[in-house]
Image (cartoon, rainbow, N blue to C red):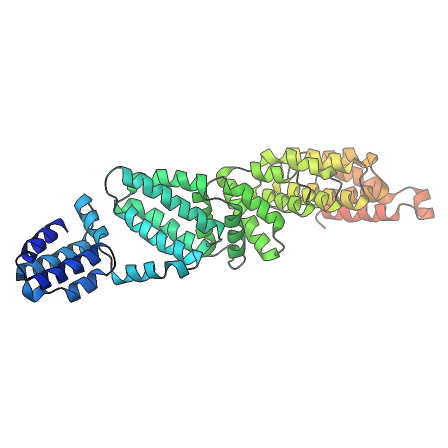
Length: 407
């Protein structure tokens, strides 16, 4: 631009006064951004000037459009004039809805990030860009943010901002996660399945957001009335917990919202982490029956010796028979060593219905000690047979013996 202006002004001094004033006014209008570069080119009195000046203008415009790397003179030249599209956006800026204005600014910021100039400009650009990402997140614009995540990954490969990827990632973790973003993700997950490519992108995007998004998603899980959205959030939280750890989910176990606790238990059971057993076991004695049931199911899925001990203690704690039977079903399905012995130990300490459940569960074990325990129960005493007492127990023992013998 400076070279072109120098040549143009030198030529302009030699023109008659009226033509010189026209060119001067046209140039001032372009530099003041009142007219576009296209209109400047269309109205310019090229025929009154040396042909080399127009050639210089055309070459100057081509250089701007094709430029891959920017320096200070090129940046000054780019900012000196505006295109028709730029002017139209400026004219309509006041009437733009906030989201449209934000997308326009985002597009400009992305252009600067791809072709940074100097040392300070990238840092300022990163701050502005991350701030716009926060605004997009707060408005729930998940589709746009997924595109920006793809742009972020491309920075390193394009060479323009590869050195600043880490700085941008840190700013994203600090500034972008918000309740609005979590709500937007929940709505977006409502429309995609957990086995889809869109869900994989959502997981990758959430990992980019960092660990701060996890408690926000947990909180959103509490607020979401939609079952499909809850399922999507649970799948996403399970994937994020494998990356960032289960601490936010463990915190959710103490929530006053029973449904929130149940959802957290289901996610933790999917993770199957032995370190969570102690926290889950405490919920076996929760005041809400549905939470106790979910805790039994979660422990049954995780398994391990500590789980066996926790469930056996629960069975012996004189809890309602239906709940003890569910715990028996869970513990007897585990292939841990010593399960049969612990069931035998619990037998004399529980009520009749639970004893029937223990006897039935023992049919899964094919050792001599278990059979020796079941045989006298299956026969019963003479008085029991005469009076018809303990009939359910005898029948359960006979069925268990048949299973134990493989019949």
